[in-house]
Length: 285
Image (tube, rainbow, N blue to C red):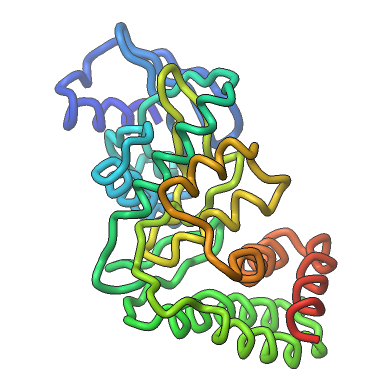
């Protein structure tokens, strides 16, 4: 591990010979300290190193187009211990105020104004532990249905987690979703996995990390913020000062969160059955 970290620091900072202190945070994460800097290090099995490579790409893309604090990536390195490591900036978090949450909303809204010619991305990445397909396309409806809903459904069927009755409900949900999509959607730069565990607040700025970046309908990020309890109202009010809420947002958010819920079903198992069933029955009945 330390050889991998030294190699990253040598390549990026010319500081591979600095004294390094490594403190474990969990089995996969560490705090790395040198004489005058602190880093965050995460590891995965070497065979899964592409997860870290795509995470690094996502962080770099967000840093280019956001006023939010995004950790700088120093590098990704495989090591002789059959692990791969990513080294990024350490961020000291603090309790946010209402003003901080409003700042977050405005800065996210401005980030969402970064657009592309196509939905998707020039490479696939990961949503949690699951591969995320980002094949570029011009139709948001086709992109989301094929690369998000049906891709996750296929995994659930393969895993024996998909109920037969859900297929009919999903077909109806997709038909309804097509009618709910505004005609003027532009591909916006999205974090892709924006729940409370992937954001925080440091002195002077909100921060986001652990992205699953792609260009999509900006409401996918807003939907995810509501999935596990929601953010304070100051966040949404400030966001909509820049990107006003439009008709049908709440129903579309249910469809967008269906992607995440089926993904959680595939990763964590049947504890997410009820939430998947609830949305499908509400939208598809």
